[in-house]
Length: 288
Length: 309
Image (cartoon, rainbow over the protein chains, first blue to last red):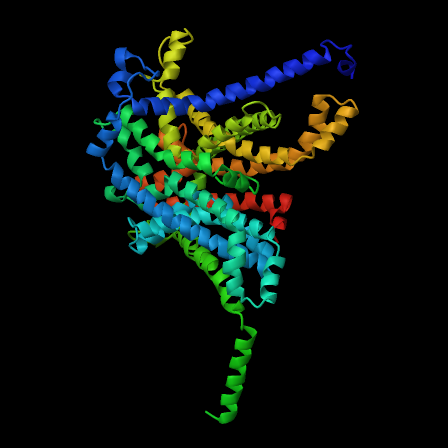
């Protein structure tokens, strides 16, 4: 290659430098594209609308931070109740999904049976499945059983969409946990149950923290299932409740961005403190 | 009961206890019963029930068996093919753009640039932020009255008057696509970055010693290692985007004039605006079989179950 011997159109050094510039430029462009919407949300949330829209233009350099938008949310909307509903179904489905996944992952890697690849395909098929295509049948069944507008039904529906990936993750995870650890416990006379409690669960911790984070994110992010299962205002989760805010005359962009900021707190904490568990989940495929 | 039978029962019982002295059978049940019960209750029963429903006209109020009538009506209507086309356009555009951005950024961060770790953390946000929040951000940015993009474009003299992106025929789909790409590019990014970091650095060192250019190294080392992941992203992300409901519903409700109505939006409209559960379950059925078809291709081409079984 001509360039490598320095006889090309551009010298090797120039080529390296250009490449370096291209790399940083790409990084910069994508950072700006990612940061701007988040920045806009935060600024509008912490300024009063009077400051933000002063002079008929949007002012995005915060000069007077204020809690006004949050106080309006607390005073004139059901934001708190919506958050409580979200927390109930999110925690419920996170625990349910993770429990099913840990049990299934352990069983699928420790017991032999025929049809394992069929089971794997069933898990993967449900993992690829469409929430709205599942929501319609679930609505029909819940409505027949009189379960619409209940935390229980929404918890089940959310578990339905998060459990397949959690099972897949734990299945992969338990394959990396050597069975020799358990065997040495059995040899020392521990029962299979004690082995599970004292040996398996502690070793599997990083795996089930990952699974729990994905289950949590699915449920917290959910709009589809809650929209379909809950039709009464007092049962709305925060995403469904807040989605109707902009239709109201009394609520403007200030309050809308304030509620967005509140909804973003759990994801923000996960990104800061638990990201290595999240990245581990991506190494086996990630989730919708 | 005869003594012989009693003793035989006792023997069988103790044999069972002996075999299960450490609770293995119980453990087996504890592992599989929750998963099986879960799949039957929230997947198998609802789907079978809904597929059954799709064979009836007005299945809720006064059911009348029509066989495949709903399906015939659905597929015979030209509108269906329009919605299918919208779904394909949306899926291809969002998946393609997310892949390009995700791949670009993964290659950049893999160069160990300054600030790379911070950029990686930053990319977690779009993925984790709830769809509703993402919609609010972009509705504000693209708003015709106060949106900062319109403000910028008007100031720069690129347009004369603000554009209502989400409610204009030619801009609605691009606006929804941009919003979706903002959220989903990180999915491709994280998967590709994981693959890139698993490549043995010695390969690059050897290529450099042999005088390969950056492009040759990419073509002969990087790309072959990423090919599988790229195909899986195209397939799985493509299926998810084809079936995406919330992001389109929250941004345009399928409008203007059904311009962004994809099949998932149509299912929702049929069920909850038009309260026609016969047609809604039939469309859900069609989508179910489409998905099953793609899954068969996926299993044939990649045998993903080999990773565990």
